[in-house]
Length: 268
Image 1 (cartoon, rainbow, N blue to C red):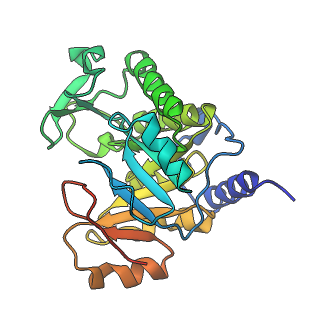
Image 2 (image 1 turned 90 degrees about the vertical axis):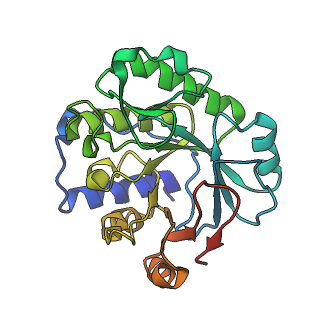
């Protein structure tokens, strides 16, 4: 029988071909295969904690935690408990508290993105960003992570201070996914709902914030149809307002509070 990664790749390509605007897919490099990479089941329990000491007592199959703050020993402990670990990185914004913050020249720093100490990046500056992001992915690999969540990869839809285009974003996001795969880690598409169909062959699962609040969750269904899991959170809605629909769509949703500490209410 074909390996599961191959089945998923074929399904993704079929979904892409069956009516997606390829968005200049011909100008993009092909997807890098990720042999043996983590591919969560459509129904997978999970925890998303990016702040505070990570509470490892939550009985879930997958943890998504901050890549810089997590130690290798923490990832090892999660694995020993039978969990998978996702490395959170902000790939589209500069954060002034990160140890590599000084590696970003001022010319690639754009507008404030709404979070303290954080500014959008000029993702067109690939000569600058490629080595920085490669080094970050090397860090995730050294710590033993199974996958990488790339945050802030929808700058083209925001006021970044740069004239970013859809194609700029596609090029950058494909670079990130392929680099994760080259290091044996799955790639997680964060938000960027406008490019789901074009990016589906490159990313292994998806993570979304508040698609039910904004009535746009249908844009994530190509992932499920391709056999790839969808994870997500809502902050302001009551559990009863989104969990039944999330479960019916085979999404793995949580209710969370900002900041993203250990507190959670799972939909299932």
